[in-house]
Image (tube, rainbow, N blue to C red; front, side, top):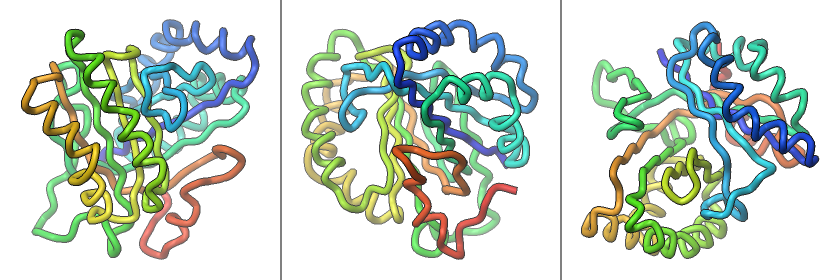
Length: 248
């Protein structure tokens, strides 16, 4: 089964930040040669809660899709590009995920490959573990200012929500290519956030005014973490539950 990883790296010094800026080009050649790696993207992040158009020059990400969990675990530890980034970073943290649902496209392709369930069953939640949500959109330039005008309310709302276990906003191109990633205790609480308040209003505006050229929505099962973020493992409480497994 496909395993998806989101690896985050924090660079605190000016030399390290200049180095990682250069990696936005140089790392592409290295990633193309990593065994077992399919889809991948290099991303920057936003300031504050991350869901802003202002870049955070200290936090960068590698999003990757792997053939299986064992390959994901081995290569995010041993592949030269990941080792180089960890060596320069003040902190590094990887979240391991299994896709459970996906619709839409990213640069014309569907990067995530959920395996169809053999029979109907519950979505990830109290019995199956926390659910992670990833959204990606290409914002039409003509609508970028109106779209980002909605974001501060959404950012404040998600920042204050006690149910969200982890959150970050990343992207390939500031203002135009944005990705949101969040982890929730269960699908019900994630859906409650998405269907009410500023987030729901923004989604309605997107649909009615056709603000996006391309959209992708995906859900994942959280299967493990590695490293530290902000001094610890923010998802350790979720992973301590008996029903969560570490990647094989």
